[in-house]
Length: 217
Image 1: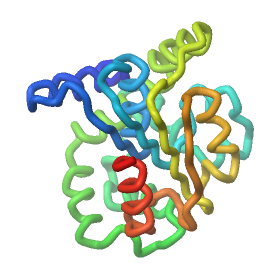
Image 2: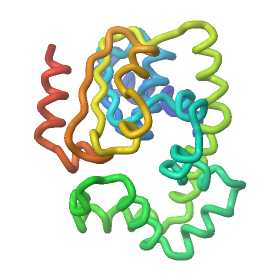
Image 3: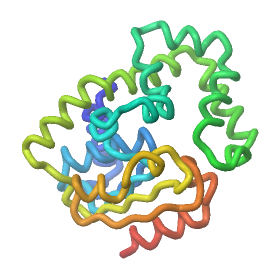
Image 4: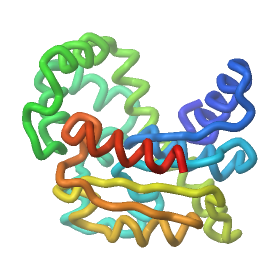
């Protein structure tokens, strides 16, 4: 149930229940991976797609080296066998969450304390930790199978696509972000913002303006 294909179908069904057969879609980080899968699996549903601060999952796994693995250490920690990472994070959830959130932003104060404690309230629930790990475990198994099948068939996202990323973030450090998406979607536009991973928190006005311009085009 944590395959991006399954989560994408959940979103299609929710939107249909709300009366929307076609819609624009914006995703950040894990949500962007679901959004990409939705656009690939249900091309008739997505009018416009915006992807924030990721490159495709398969692109990352195919490129992994020591420096990428060091920066994306959590990808390999969270996919460990069921119970192990969940237990370690659950021993001190506040420390674990501060470590996660502090690793990827360029502005330490971008995530407010009020927002942090709401994240922490959820993070203290073992079911939340398990769900988070299962999402990453799916990314390293079934999601890769789906991505490889698409690549082999030459399938691409066919709707107008925008990619935004943080100039000071991990993705920009290791990848030509715009090129990775132009290999997998058409047409694609995009640019870097002067921030780390948390575009909406670190550059809220720029992020909103870029999305509004794209979605209203």
